[in-house]
Length: 209
Image (cartoon, rainbow, N blue to C red; front, side, top):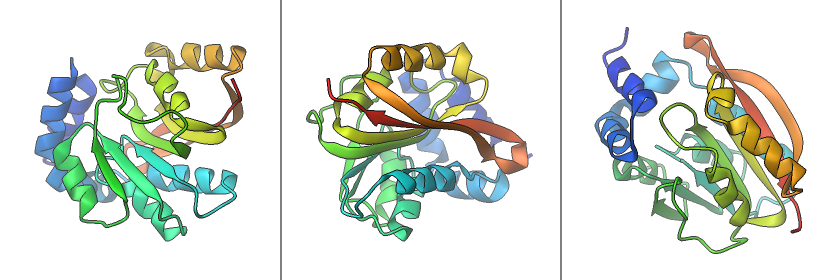
């Protein structure tokens, strides 16, 4: 058991956004070491590859929603994308992300609320590790759609177990039925390899309303 497993658990058991912010503020400094090295966190790599497969231009404007310490941004940067913004609820996590120098802008915001971001602001949104226990409810999908250009892409992970329990599936299917977005691909991928945890990796195209 690694020394910060209690903080990892605290993020999943957070009863409100205040508790979530507190847990991440204490975990930020050790987050990368604990998740990548100790738990085998590979979801950022899978998501970056999925988004890269959809985008036609390295100049695409991308939002890394729930960016945390910038693990996804690093992967996208290595793939040749440099027009990336980071959004996260935790200032301490964003401070770590800033040191990686892969983002144009750092936005501290709560994804459970209306975002102070223009409609159609991004060509793509990537969101890893956020649609899970104790984090963000399914209604956040609506905001991601709003800030993405029509014909743009949204790639995100959904933690196994939370897919049904948090009504993510119900909301995703509802938006499909309303022709708000189109499911391009959904695959089951490793999430935390050393913990034997998987997630669903979902790729959607935003449709013209």
